Amino acid sequence: MQLSIWPIIAVVLEFLVKLGFVIAVLLRKKPRYASTIAWIAVILAIPLLGICAYLLVGEVRLGRRRRFRYQEICQSINQSTAGLLPPNKNSQCEVASDFQHIAVLAEAVGDNQPRAGNKLELIGDTDLFIQSLVEDIDQAQHHCHLLYYIFLTDHSAQRVAKSLMQAVQRGVTCRLMVDGVGSRTFLKSSLRREMEDAGVKIVEALHAHFIRMLFARVDLRNHRKLAVIDGKVGYLGSHNIADAEFAVKSRYAPWVDAGVRIVGPAVRDLQHLFITDWFMDTDESLVELLAIASPPQETGVCAQIMGTGPNSFNEAMRQLIQAAFYLAKEELITTTPYFVPDEATASALFTAAYRGVNANLVVPARNDSPLVAAASRSHYESMLETGLKIYEFQEGLLHAKTVTIDRDLALITTANLDRRSFELNFEVSMVVYDSDFASQLRFMQTNYMSRSRPVKLEEWSRRSLPRRLWQNAAGTLAPIL
Image (cartoon, rainbow, N blue to C red):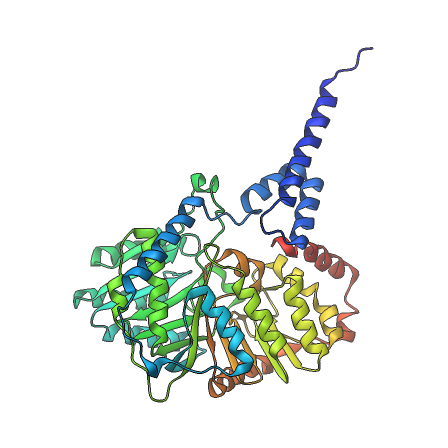
C-alpha cells in the first residue's frame, strides 16, 4: 500500500509556519520577554488562531504613514509656536528634589515643563463634572474643544451636546473629537447628525475599518479625556461624556470617576495635545490658538501635563509610575479599574510594601472585563504576602485612575495600570507637585477605601481550586492582554 506524501508535506509546512512566526516574535524591535513567551505559547498551542491573533494585535503598529505624519505635525507646531509666547517667570515652578527626575521624564515626552499657578478643582461626582463642563461651555466666547474616548447619547451627553449647539449659535467654534470604537454608537446616532447640522465640528479619531487592519493595529485607541474652553479652562481625568449609570454597561453601575478642572498655564499644554490630535485626523492646523495662555493664578499650584501614545515615547507612563512607586517613603495609594501590570511595575509595587511603605491598591470588586479581573486577581496572593493592602470597591465600578505618594505627589490620569494603557493607547496625565492637592486626592482615595472590602491573605489563600485555576490561567495571558 502506497502512503500519500501530502500529510507529511502539511506537517512540515505547519512546522515551518510556526517556526517563522516564533522567529518573528523573537525579532521584535522592543521585546518584552514575558509577552514574547506568552505569544510563542499561544502560537504553538493554537496555531491558526494564535497566528491570526498575533497578526492583529501582536505588534504595536500605528502605521508608518501615521507615524511620519505625527512627526511632521509636531515639527510644524513647534516651529510655528517658537516665540509665540514670551517666557513667563510666574509660570515657572521649582519641583522638590525628590521628584525632579519625574518632572524631567514627563518633560522629555511631551516637552511640557511643570507649570506654576494652576488652580485645580478635584471632581469626583459625574453629575458635578457634567454640570461644571456645561457651565463653562455656556460661558465660552471663542472656542470649545472636547476630546473623549466615550461620548454616549444619554442624558449627560444630551446636556453637553445642547450646550455645544447653543454655543455655536453665539458664534463660538465648537470641535468634538471622539474615538472611533469607544464612541461608535454616538457616531452613528441622530444626536451626532443634529449636532453637525447645528454647526458643531465632529471628528472620529482612529477610524476602525478592515483595510486599516492590514497596516496598523485596529485596537490602538485614543483613550484621552480632556476639554479646553477658550484656552483658559481645561478638564482632565477618567470621566467620559456619559451618565454614571453608563447605559452600555449598566450592570456594573455606577461608574465612579475622578477628574480635575484646571485654570492656569497647564491648560495650554492640554490645548497643544488637542490641536495635535485634531491636526492628525483633519489636516486643520489650529496653531494660532496656542497664542492664548491662561495666566498664572495667585493661589495656583505646580502641575505638569504629559501625553503618551504609540507614536511617541510610550514607555514613559510605565516608567513614571514605577519611579513614583520607588520614591514612596511612607504611603502609597493607587486606584485603577484594570490592574494587569508588567513584572517591573508589579515589582516596584511589591518593593514599596517590602520597604515598609503603607502601600494600598484599590480596584473594583466587579469588573466589566472578567478576563482582566481574573488576571488581576492572579497577583493577589503574592502581593498580599509582601504586605501590600488590597481593597475591592463595592459600590459600582471604580473607574478613577489616581496615585498619591506621601501626600506630596499626586497623579490623575486616563491610563490604567495595564499594558494597553502603557503601550497601546493615547493617554493624558497630570502630575501635581503640591501637598495640599495631594491630600485632597488622598481624601478621595480613602473614601473609596472606606467603601471597599479589604482582601485578607488568609481568606484569599483558601479560595476554591477552580477559581485559583481560572485566575492563574488568565494570569499567564496577562503579558498580552
